[in-house]
Image 1 (tube, rainbow, N blue to C red):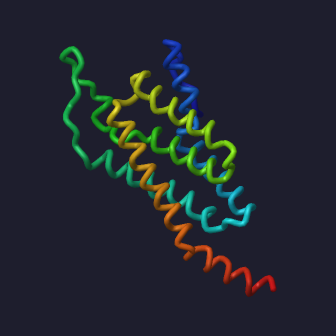
Image 2 (cartoon, rainbow, N blue to C red):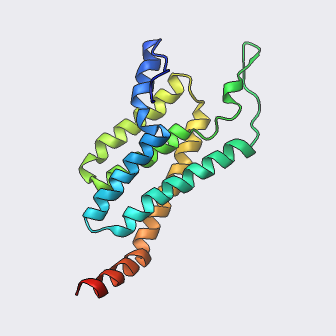
Image 3 (cartoon, rainbow, N blue to C red):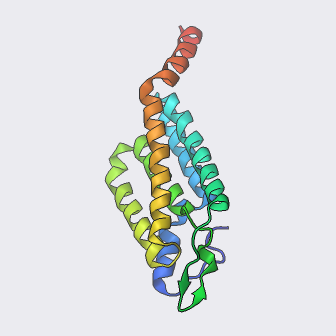
Length: 172
């Protein structure tokens, strides 16, 4: 259950918990699926298939990177901050960026609000102490690569031609 065991003290941490909630794994997947449903309804079956696939692939890459890359240990006041040993790239930054991109594709009028929200997510993840700036940058970079893959695949027309050819034969 998201936020069930979350700390809301200090207030900034509580705000960060709420603002980054859509980056939680299950909720982010549901939001991407909602965007996919909307895209399918709007006649974009290729994009509707690509966004959930991009989410799955990007999250898999994030998990592989976290468990295979070794980052130098971070210390504060001589104390090893073990919570940051496997925090690159930030999964919350990755998933929030994918949610923002998928929702912005499905509802273009929300682009400015989604961009502002994503900026707040990036800042709050660092200010609340959940991630280092490089963790957030890594998550955003991975999300950018995944979103660029979706855009390139949809623009290539390959999926659209296949989907269109299947529909044309059955419907007319």
